[in-house]
Amino acid sequence: MRARKELEIKGIYLAVTLLFLVFLLIPLCRLFFKSFENGGGLTLNNYREVLTGRGFLAAFGNSVRISVCCGLLSTLLAFLLAYTIHYSNLPGAFKRFIRRAAVIPMLLPTITYGFAIIYSFGKQGLITKLFGRQLFDLYGFWGLLLGYLIYTLPVSFLLVSVTMEYIDKKFSVVSRIMGDKPWQTFVGTVARPLSGTLAASFVQCFFLCFTDYGIPASVGGRYEVVATVLYNEMLGSLPNFNRGSVVAVLMLVPSVITIALLRYLEKYNIRYNRISPIEIRKNRLRDGLLGLASAAVLAVVLSVFAVIFLVPFVEEWPYKVSFTTGHLRSVLRDKSLLGVYRNSLLAAFMTAFLGAMTTYAAALSTARSHLPERGKRVIENISLITNTIPGMVVGIAYMLVFTGTSLQNTLALIVICNVIHYFSTPYLMMKNSLAKMNASWETTAMLMGDTWLKTIVRVVTPNAMATILEVFSYYFVNAMVTVSAVIFIAGARTMVITTKIKELQYYTKYNEIFVLSILILATNLAAKALFRFLATERRDAASRCLPAGAGRILKQIAGGTK
Image (cartoon, rainbow, N blue to C red; front, side, top):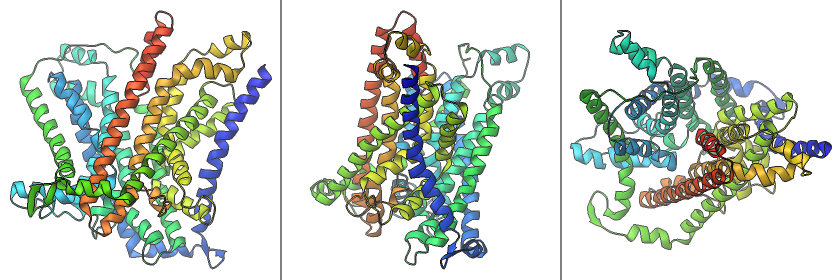
């Protein structure tokens, strides 16, 4: 029986590692060697051409500059929103509004942000009309900064808010009793425990900005960043795959630095043995200022996206503002656009299914097995690598490896790319959930004559179903909005909505772009609501089936894996 268990575990482990060997390691190695190829041999000339050229160095400097600015501002604004939720006496409805509104941008592709900014802050934009003048130069640094802030704010907010929730607030009471001044209490009991998280937020925001292509594609203008240089080298009017591979390899430098920094910052995370709930002191001035500031931040974010629901229902913005459903009906009658939408749905469902299966198998190998630690570290390292490799780099590596094969321009390749690219977070969710379950279930079942695999199917999987559904939801939403990777591997017949939006940009068909964006948002909202409901039902069902006290523990486990 034990021999069979080991065989089953090793089979699952081998399948997972083989998947990442073929679709991660080999493509990255091919990309690396491509960067040295020139005239049939290996040379450093490609690197010399790129690094000595003014275009790349200028773009690299621009990327660093704007990523630093965005990382600082996004972390600051995220802290403001999180502090409003956890350290004020504002109404619960307002706090729930902050939680939901802050993450809305995650449900839309980044390339849509740029077009929404254009129609909001452009010369004929909605906000420009309200103020009577254009507030800033849209194409370039300020347009990119606004787009990046909208993009990174949800990620930073979730990171900071979750950590702030687990700060023991009793220390603030102790600080006041000891006579500390308000700023000393704030620094010692809020800022210091969050220092590691705030630094990690900055690093994460920096990386997201540095590697994003969607926003520069729409509002970058002449302000070139590394992502646009990479796109132009690979898919521009005069493509050069060798130089493009060099740029892609150089984009991995922030990835390596990010991994090192995040590992280093872990030691600054403060963990409390218990959380003591306390009543927040009443302070109308504090609550008023926090409420106004948070409302202003969210108003800017939501006002940008307001045009998505306004422009498609206007005859001709801004010249004929009469209401019409003609643009919507035109898109819904267009078989090619509906075909693109069907491709996106199919790719998202296939990504979610394969992604959930892959992460579950990987988490079983590390959290519910006795494999050697060396083998487990392989999957842990894979998780770290996939978390920091830019989507553009993955897409280019796939283009180099799979061009000319049966996988070229297929939905299957898009699905695999999404599974690999977004593996890290779902894997950590699943591993944490499985690790907190009763470790003796498999042993008990084995004594009763069940195989390890049968125990996993009958006992572990039903109790992990809530987390599996959350992983499914995570993969589905990200597959619907991704653009940086799939833009290099989608073909004419396998085009998804995000790549279609990029194509429609060239024909300035913004009404179609916004209608497709509404479809993405509506689909993601419906999917998240459905999967949240199913996950809740599964948790409740698991709780009812467990002995007294076990249900409460399971709920705590599930809550900690969101």
